[in-house]
Length: 258
Image (cartoon, rainbow, N blue to C red):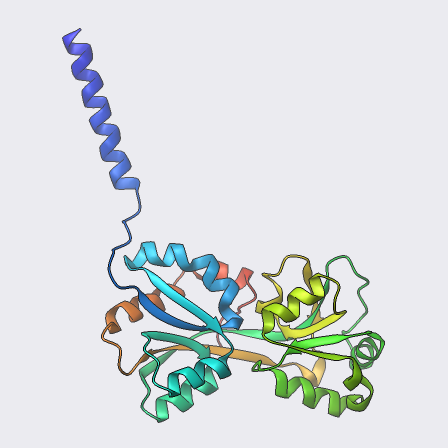
């Protein structure tokens, strides 16, 4: 019995060692890294947060909002360690000394049309088809303070339908509510980034704006000029721009930067 007991103990010890080697490193306790992230990357960050925390050994406290709202918070002096917002906003904040250089490109997302899953799919592959689909939609929604709002409304003007579609526009308080309203059947069409349509259950991408109206939003990351956690923030950026995050970014509607 003694040899059998010894063998059992040895086997158990070996199994424990294998488990310890295979197990991912524990996430360190203590103050989390504070991230301010654009709604355009909400689905991506929610999918990657746990893996990122495990990889870098730090907890993340992530807050999402529009780039415009986050930029205002940064300008007002809010404490944070890392922000991921549009390239244009990053550039402006860098010039004003509120962020540290260098910035790092994270990816880009195309502006497109979303509809409720299972609804009829009008052809928007041509400018004529796109114009007709917008005219035929009983209601159109998009984020009130989204980075793409200016381009959307310029598109209406250039298509010659701004006055026609104005009565059926529903401005939403964020890309999430806009896309969710389409999934719930409260609006017929949402105009927003692919990355803001993909994560919403019950909504699907109809297609991008066609031809000369194609447009994308580019996202970049930079560290707060006042952060004392530069190493941790850099580790987050390295993870998000590395090979483990790439397939998730793509699946969530974020293409590689160009």
